[in-house]
Image 1 (tube, rainbow, N blue to C red):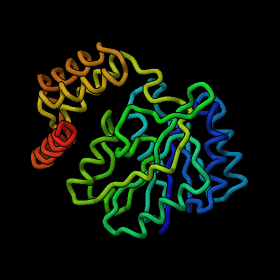
Image 2: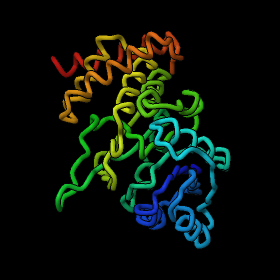
Image 3: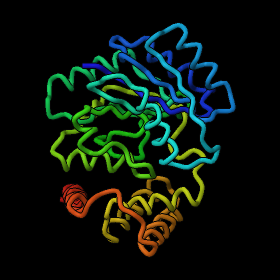
Length: 281
């Protein structure tokens, strides 16, 4: 299986060397890594270029974009830009530049894909540093494949129509994979170090877009309230509940375009309710 990885990077000089070092020492390295320097103003391009000069399977491309932090859309647009430069692949990955992979990461993941022809997405788990320890980044269930370490089988990636350019892209992709009868798998023993915790630099407006994403995934208002409450509880910030609802209703009254069809939305709502009831029973 040919593995192509795209890494969108905007001002990631503080983390990029450690990240790419972890790719270089893989027991089963990807066939290519495409680093997208997304309008960086630090040494991101210089660091990535140094790796590309030493390792011919690491490519660097530059993209002109806004300096504005646009959660979801900016990173997906950069990923899609990098994808245009990809060679033929069986597995396509969207990885962040602020992670450190264990040395056997791709070897273990590749084994899972080769053993299961229905597997559409696979990943390890993200851990963040607290004090002297690395602990699970507890903002999602351990069965969820997180945004910084997405790896898709091409058949699955094509079937779901690629990534949606906005907040929620890393949830709707999993749901659509399951809608199209692909399996998703998290390998719990693969601990990936996440050097910058999720949500760093988020603003009030950014959290409203999470509610907008729930609208775009065709969540009902009840499901949206439950999801918003969970988000606020995990962040220990009650205001996030109300911000998410504001975003949902703004999108509703403005009739924003959806991420999914009505049939897909019906499946997503049913799937979410099954998950909720399974935890209550």
